[in-house]
Image 1 (cartoon, rainbow, N blue to C red):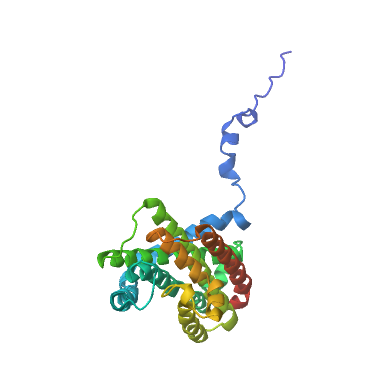
Image 2 (image 1 turned 90 degrees about the vertical axis):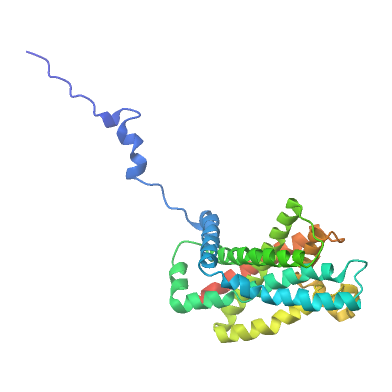
Length: 287
């Protein structure tokens, strides 16, 4: 009697078989959740903002009008009358970094209007039901504002160079300028989103934004040295993140003495605090 033939082993049981090699296609890995999606979300928000600018470049040109007027009218006039002592630095050179910081702040401070619009159109609700952390959404918005502010700062730097402002073109220093502008814009955009989470409407946000932009600007060292301010205004200037942004920009662009380590630390801390505050108020805005 012949022996019963042994059934051959299936190929899938052998190591390195096609079934094992294609197991990843049949059982995909779990989706990324939590903080693992933060870099992707931040990059996606920045790409979206760049696409908006690509389709509508008029925003860049129109926003360049105001800083150009500050440099061409205010800066040139006060340079001739020598009304503000700047320690041997031409006033136009002294003013240019302040105007760069101002233009970046004006872009970021009204960023909360966009998130209110997204709430009204239902986009924010859809984002909130995703597994992405709220702080990741806020971080993406904040650094998207930083990208727009960097583009605006580049336009102002070109205008300043054309009218004779002496600035450095060292790549490392310009990279530092980018970091400073992004951090400061992240804070001011988060400040705007935090206010949006409190007031909940565009009209109220517009009113508050207009009420705080000029005080922030004049209570900084953008137009004049801190030493010329009265004592109470000097105290306000020391807690104003815009002052640290201007100080860093002056040190990087025109080489004036600056506390770069302190400036970067304050701006980074302000950005983190702003992201946490805006993230905690995002749920209230989405209700």
